[in-house]
Length: 206
Image 1 (cartoon, one colour):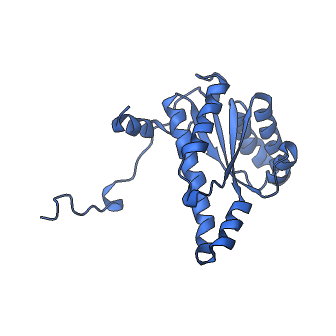
Image 2: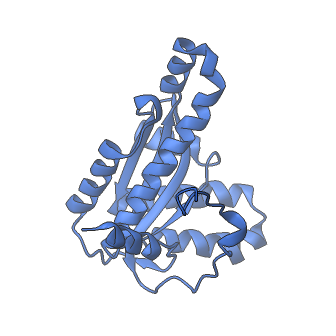
Image 3: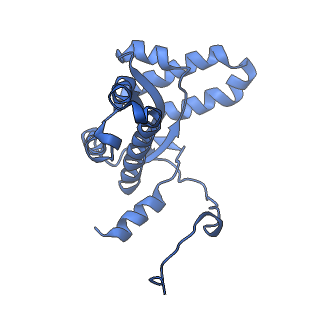
């Protein structure tokens, strides 16, 4: 592998919503991808504040059944029937979900031990889970596994915690739905690079 391969995988990483259960890898290998990201993704202050809940098969379906029940009670009936329910059914039709949590006890401990930087630790923790998300997502893209990111927290937090005995100090931050690619992602337009990037010194300062 070279840097160009990594760049190509980054280009392939997209939000794929048409997912099915025909995974190109067995669940054990997908779990290995998640373990690898958890082990090797950057961790500010070496804090390791990310916690993951990985759900396959019936456990994954249970998550989106919970989401449907919670949202049906929170969303106007017409909106739920026309928009929310079909979207949740599409997530349920995928192969699995990864729930990304932040361990607030880890963040609190850092704040107590290094009060001078207390305000920075929650931001650093967010960066950690975002980098891990990207690592898993990009590796999935390289393996021809589709994925998308959802944020049904905090609506589903309590029911999810009760179902899978999630510790109270784990704060749910996002949900990644993954599966076989039933249809590729739609074409995407990218914003121009030039207004967003400034580079100095390419000529060696001459």
